[in-house]
Image (cartoon, rainbow, N blue to C red; front, side, top):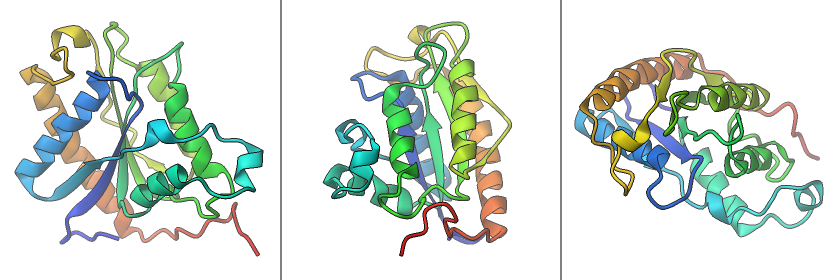
Length: 206
């Protein structure tokens, strides 16, 4: 794990895989900000759309290559950032499926355990994904993630702040993300310095 002298390796997960996603655009903006400061490497996780739907049957069969691909990206990360849209007052199925694969006993280790997590979200509505983020915090609790409580980032009226291709253009939002990234870096480093064990008590195998 990274200490105060190392670069943080952060896996960024988008809850939307559509072309022009504003939430993926939020992550790209964070990648850009991280590159400027040189202390954090943020990599957007790929392959979520290729995950089969999680099921108990799948959990005891052969591990799909798509699951291993995502699993490996999460394993290498010191921390996680998730950008979620809001569907029907909650997180999208794509994101829930990602978490379900982490809690099934295949692979047999919870790769999320004690990793620092930061949550952001953008929406065309005035609510700015706040209900989805609350649900996401509950899911993260089950996965033993260490969730940064504040500050919170709810980007509303996204149609006016992003291009049709999902690129962030609003300077005020850039400044908000920069302040948020400062806090997340501090939170992540302090969490990692605690040296919490990553042994999964829930998913032991013989």
